[in-house]
Length: 278
Image (tube, rainbow, N blue to C red; front, side):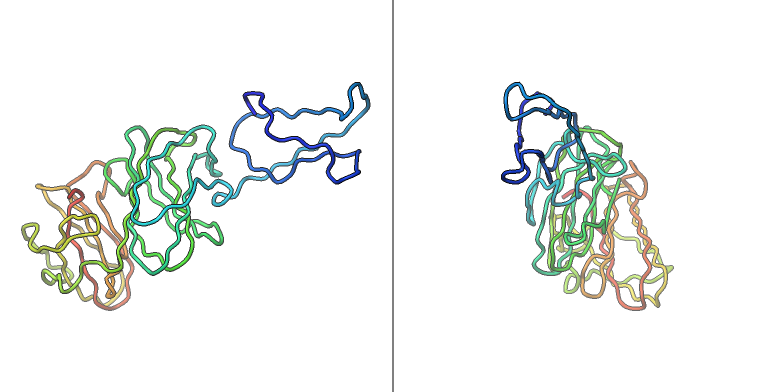
C-alpha cells in the first residue's frame, strides 16, 4: 500500500506451477499502490511479463461499510481512501433489509460538506432515488416507500472528491398519521389559511403534522406550503397513507416555503402540513 506495507503475496497461481504468480479478485480503495516483482529463490534472474487489469468496484457490496436498520443514527466520514462513483463523488454504503412495506425518511447532514444522498436496489445495485438539497440548507433528505428487499444507502457529497464528516438519520413508519388524524379538507384551487398545529398528530420524527384530505381527478398535483413563523415541511400521502413525496425547502435557504409537484392518478390523497424541527 502507500505505506509500503505488504498485505498480499503469491508464489504459485496453482500448486506446482512455478512459472506464474497471481493475485486476483481483490477490492482496493482509491490510492497509490506498489507492485513488487520478485523470484522465489535468492539470486534468480530472467525475463518476465507483468499484467495488471482493473475493474471499477461494485458501488454496493464491494464498497460496503456495514449493515444498518431503522431507526438508526450513523456518524461517518468521507475520506480520500473511500470508493467513488463514476462522477468522482466519494461515498460510504450501508446495507439495510426491509421486512415490510414502509415509508422511509432518510436525512443526511454535515457541517462541512454539501451532502448528496443515494438509495440503491440491493439486487441490481442500481440507483432508485437520490437527493441533493431536500433537507435544510445544503443537506439532503429522501422520503420514499420501500417494499421488502435489500437496499443500500449511500451518503456522499455534491462535489467530486470532497471529504468530511456527516450524520445520517434513518426513520420509518408503517403508516403515516392519516385518518383518524384528519384535520380538514382541501380542494384544488382553494387556498387554506390556518394556524399550526391544529391537531395532535405527529410524523415519525416527532414533528406535529396536520392532515388534509384532497380528492383529485388525476394529472399533475401541485402543492405549496408557506409560513413566516416556522420552517415548513410538506408531505403528500397516497390513499394507503404511504408517502409519495416530501419537501422541506423549495429553494436552498428559503425556510418559509415547501413545494411538491407530483403526477397522480384519480383518487383520494392526504396532504401533511408540518415543520422541519420538532
